Length: 559
Ligand code: ATP
Ligand code: MG
Image (cartoon, rainbow, N blue to C red; front, side):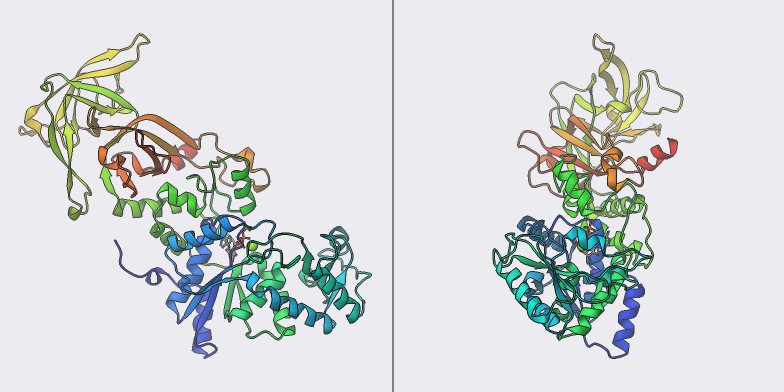
């Protein structure tokens, strides 16, 4: 395992170049960044990119990174999300120390500053409906129209705004708007809404407030209060920057943060919109936010994806200014690389076929040595029981094999890993003509898997002892979406009907079935698997984190 700090893994990008230049110019002694999730869902791999960027910068340069909950919309926000976000950031390997903040901590100050904007003639209470405001905002080519309430006196605005706060009006009756320019080329500057009425219970401020600030109004001021130097967000906020700067200029804020934008992460076969992810959960397309098919950190954790693989992935994709779509194969590559390095080898038989070794003494059991990691002798060995009755993988036998099939078939000899050479001597079928059991013989001279006479076999197969293995359920996950660029507005049509395959009669080694086995393992020849929380004492459940090879891309190419 690497002992290097995360920071040393990160490359250079335009944001780090800006920060370095700012430090060189003596603009700051300390760099302060923040990761500002809205607690309205679980974090996904796109957030991992933002977390690694913001927290990574704070590790590489003198400075710190805040975790700030952007909790300005109580209707969509829940404590469950606040808790999961903290757990996920920690799991990814980052720490905010004592710098945990909430935008709601600043509601009082934001309110006072809104009154100041009113007194300065820079904000007004608008009685138009949301719809009227939308319709009078204009378009990219046409200016908007001034509200009939735009020229209210300071006194009337202050009175109405205080009464909004006091709860005198119902939801949607009025809003507070900045008074900027309804003809501005940038639509974000056409008198944006600062406050809306929302009689809703807030997870932190309870029923204290019934007006809540907009993202645009709350975000930059929260940055300024916390002394954020570089406020890094995704590209869709680029057009909001003039508004961000407008507030910072007009208000007596304690510091002057700057906003920088980078391209958000998009991945093939994946949707990273919280709206879509919420719907997938609510409509039951998946088993929950931590369903192993979800691109959430909770889902990936449950699936056995190591956090180091995610950090490596976001390092490899880098930070750019132009939007692009990353091939999901790149993520899978990073997961495989990490798991190949770190996970112990075990054997599992996913679709068992019984084998009886006819010349092996009845009742005899011997313990054979199996290697835990081929590249890491320190990982040691373990014992595997070998007896007269075994299971092999159903796919590893063919009664009438084609020419290039080298695994088990009548008369053919193969190696059972760590054990012996065996040869198939007979086939037992059920009434339907299906093979239900094989008869084999073994060569006692080949113990350990090599023949003293030097004869070779073309296949080495995994297997398990019938009596000393444990029944298990194995879940094979495929892409949640069948379409490489799923349609966010009609995602249900693009769902992959084969995203989950359940193998209910699998067998695993006893050691991985124990309840304290939480690390992913490689089931030899099958892929990487992790014990799932759905396991019961009698029946462990394993999720496949990822296969050994990229079969999905090949299947797609074949069509
Ligand atoms: P959505 O658009 O799906 O609702 P969001 O961006 O609104 O997601 P937030 O909780 O506001 O979700 O995001 C917190 C931070 O994570 C923001 O700074 C946001 O820019 C960043 N972020 C969100 N999605 C991505 C992504 N796909 N790639 C990179 N950064 C992202
Ligand atoms: Mg957002």
